[in-house]
Length: 482
Image (cartoon, rainbow, N blue to C red; front, side, top):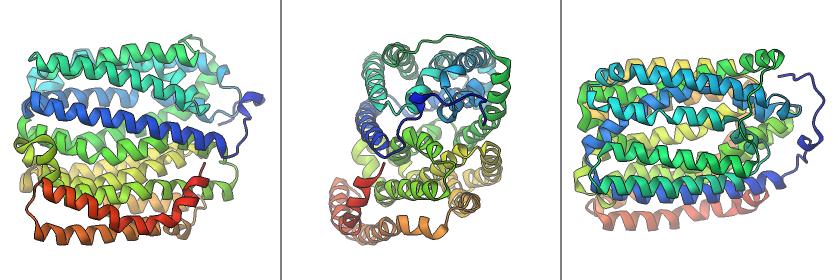
């Protein structure tokens, strides 16, 4: 994108590694605290709520994710890669975000009854209308959030997300204990997001100030609309399994599948999230230097592979003891889906890295077509999986499409930007070898022990012992990253 303005000196910050390394460290701390808190909250809620409650909330969550995919029309990401002073376009970005979010909420409010009925959960109508108020908050926070990302101010993100976690957890658990079912989840999210938005405005020093410049608006929309389209397709890709499961198998099966998907998403929500808060800005800094962007992508891939690959192996092969130990025997049915969704999680982690890389190079239309192909393939595969194998069949179909079709195509597209396949392969060679060794150990262990907490603890301990020698030599490279 060309801004037609001179670069702001403040934005010509050193392109060295120190800002990125510091941002990654803070992002990692933020993610560990946030996900640990979310995990513990989930354990508590699994004892207070039923699979049907989670199923109703899942319907509302699908609706929210759909409108968020199109919210602010993708223009806020332009603040991260804008080559000039981002404050020149910030008022226009804010206006587009606010108008878009208002229209999206109206569509959500009036469409809630139809959407809930289509997913065989009419009781979710009110929960949808409440939860989708978050769309309005997203429109308000879009500009300051992306400015914080551009400036690598992950300390601000840490404090904002910590405030959100504390407030959301307190409200949700309190209401769940009082018997408010799926409403407790929606109210907790709403209250937490409102108060954390205020914290963001104060710490970032940026409050929503609308304005409009037609010249910038046209550039922003040309950049953002393909990303909004790609985001909508990502929504479809990540939620079509919920729709299929709810329609074909019912709310109880959907609740089990949601719990499995949440567990399988841990590598994405922890490892990928840490890197994604920094990766787009990092790639944007080296977008004009082929050698540097290849080196940066290789380091990012290695950084993600080290924790992601063994975590996904453990999730897949220890699915049953993990689910029953953490959530209790009533949730054992979700393990059938978790073992395959762990494969999907690994593909998603690297797919999101490729996505950010392509966006930083300005290839937003390419990402839209890639996500569209992914969604079409799932539309054909998931109903067959649901009819033949229940939630296990849905998970297997989802993982198969991702591993056998999506990942190879994404890799091909990235290599056409000048990235060497050999460099990528070398970057993840040691973690991949270690993950295969972990898989072999866990397969043997499953034959020796019953699926219980003993197998879980033994598996985790042996996995760490087997895996560490493979990645220990990479520690210097990991410290140099950033």
